Image 1 (cartoon, rainbow, N blue to C red):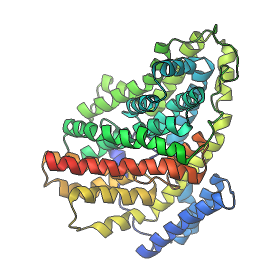
Image 2 (cartoon, rainbow, N blue to C red; image 1 turned 180 degrees about the vertical axis):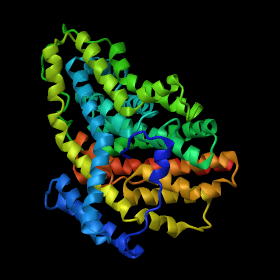
Image 3 (tube, helix red, strand yellow; image 1 turned 120 degrees about the vertical axis):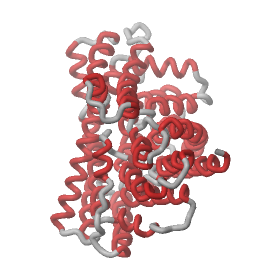
Image 4 (cartoon, rainbow, N blue to C red; image 1 turned 60 degrees about the horizontal axis):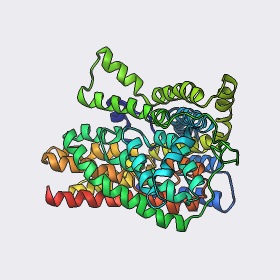
Length: 470
């Protein structure tokens, strides 16, 4: 799930077949043992997740048949790639979130949401916000934008953290996998030759009940299963008991505009690339540049410095202190997320995705169920929704050539649903959510992982039902 927003050529290259490093049985056994060892190191021996993932990643690579130096290189490449794609985004997101909190802009948003929504309605409101933010964005970008709002809403309303967080996360994740013009589904649309407009329409139809079930409805169970305190991140003067009734704060419009600014920029890029792919005119090039996640979030930080700083009555020293204080709390998060990416890359380089592809080749199962199954297997094995989407689309492209336009669009959505299946310890996104929300590994498995499972299964159910009526 951790990636940047690449161009089509980069996505295609990601699907290149990796030859298995050893026998199929050895790869599967070693991968399972590796996951179990990582969980045991973290939960039983209380080893820091960064160290556990590093040891487990290199160990799995060697056990699967990679040369020791190749295993280390693979882990390092995955760590570096993840930090390149996610580290900068998390850093910019932390800066933006701290400005949002310190200027009073987050207070303004939260107060408005709380005053206009009952406690019963807030989970639904958060699901809607997560869906809107997540439409053009990769999950990690939306998360770093929304996490201050999630935490402050939970803190101010005294609602259980999971009652607020799960609906927003569900909205982000469903958009990530099911609805173009999000980059993930767009790749499958291109690879399978699907109709973009039809896929978008069908994706929205499936996304609405999926968000409802995996978000507001499931959050009630998640809140009872896992009771964790609200993290201390993004504390404001109001949270510390200070009287802020006369404090200058940015308006609600200015605050929301700051959150939506990178959303609009990335959405404009996605639409431009979908309407006129490969264009080289200056206007198109500008949209592509501004819509790059790193650039879009960087612009949001600059906007926050000016608009939040001025709107919140902050001087230059206060703005500088806010930016500087935003980075130390996320150092551990970055290392863990990077190590999760390293472990994922080791699994990819051992060729376990190729083993799965070979195992299902020639199957007589329904093409829609098969599309979901292939993507789900690769997702569980590698921890990457990107690899799952690209590989499954590549495997099934010859099948799609013989299908009608509706069936091809439904195949895109089946692949998207499968690519979200059962996020666990080999997914850098798993660790990002865990560290932000302050849960243990098992608590994150009981909430985040179950939520992803529900999204995937409910999404598949929607695909199969639509296949009966359209």
